[in-house]
Image (cartoon, rainbow, N blue to C red; front, side):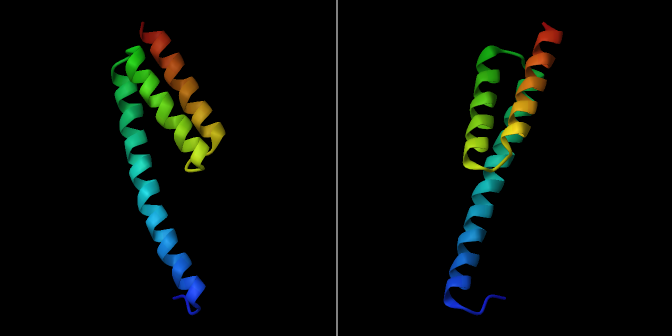
Length: 80
């Protein structure tokens, strides 16, 4: 457990950020699954938006976001 005042504050901050990041990741997973099931451009665009936002905030790596976007695009093209 943290001892110093700043370490205690950092722990509180880290726990808050972890909760927020978990929510974003769950939303992202739902959006990607929905995009895989329904290949409409609007659903793909919303998944891309969430991926880009998560990569910009540092929740996921930018290359992972690019890889998922490429996978969604190729998956949508194969099914159409």
